[in-house]
Image (cartoon, rainbow, N blue to C red; front, side):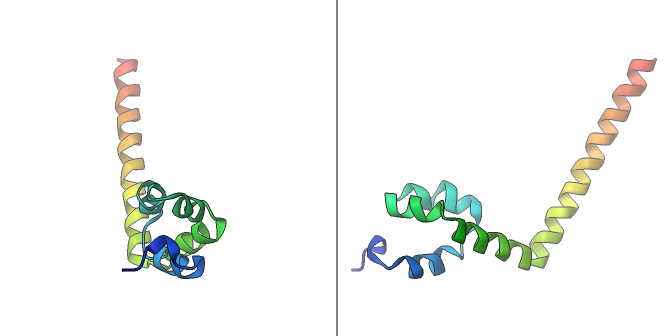
Length: 86
């Protein structure tokens, strides 16, 4: 059996490019020191950010969620301003 930590970093970059940034920093980085070092590499972070931007469905859903959250926050703020003025 092959130990993943023994694979060349180029191969690990390719493998880790298929996980999310969250998974990279909160799961993969906890496996061993080599994975931690790779997870902190600007190269892998750049790859993952590019992957997210290229995933149009995810990006659109993210922005739609952000707009909905913003609308809810504005509504709560407006309601509290109205209550304070009464």
